[in-house]
Length: 399
Image (cartoon, rainbow, N blue to C red; front, side, top):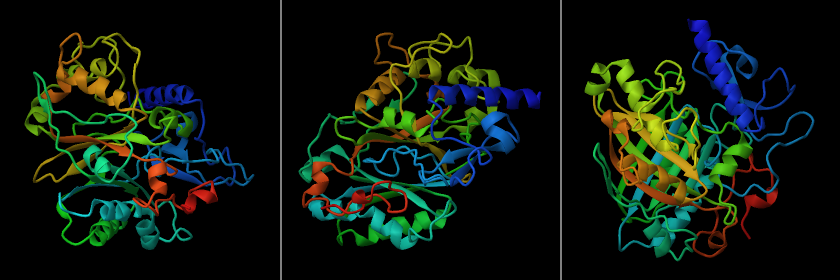
């Protein structure tokens, strides 16, 4: 039975890899000398690219032949398409109405400076490197004079099985590292350097890997994510602006329900098997998979995709659940899914995922491109990519 689970997981990974054009992933054995980052998978051993129980992600560094897979003119921030690490920082900052918004924006845009102070680029490796990015809420971005390419206002939504509240936020820092201490230092640096008395409220949350990539409910998270850089960029990067849009939601799980419900009941709510995340061939139209795609048929078309970066958070003695975070080229990708969660779509049906968890916070924000015109203004000078990850030295300093 266990070997069958491993095989099915490997086959499903192979399917996703083919969908992702087979770019950006390799094993150490097949690319001698290539610098790679290891990501544990859910089962001990698998086949093909899962050999040895590990997935290998090309980390944008040059291999021995000098070939770089990433496009030379990288224009997106470090947090957008990179895979998750062992830990994540989700830092929402609410700025006071009378604060100097432009000064706060400048501090946030210097996030890479703080990263480099914590772990100098020449010393960073896969164990302690930090992938970080900054994003701005719609009202705050307008406040500092930014140009909005698409409306990304996040409305409050109510549905039969639960609400999706709009809680706002001005500055959002998303960072990933295998060292939680480094993420803590980054949060300290950002908050310390903001103008005195400018912060109305800060929400500092740390995500973590649970059971090799599962949600606290037991289900595997992010099954349908594109696996290669090119595929993830296609989904997450806006072709006109070069930037991305971001959704954040904080969910608190109802463990009384999770612990008492039958596995088959929860599988029908989600639309996938609990053990290996195989999509159910027969599932309710109100299952989460059916709501996020075009219907309950097996392998239904996906009108919109997103790049998920979610991780579990919280304490077992207090509240815990999932910090949902995803990037997309347009807010329309999120809007399609959220409307289908709360029954705003034509069929007026809700999403059964809210039978086992409750959304308590949510908003959209914009994750600007590095060469966005706003970044070249005196509003947000200093934003840049990490010098040890960029493939274009000109991106490391703004003119």
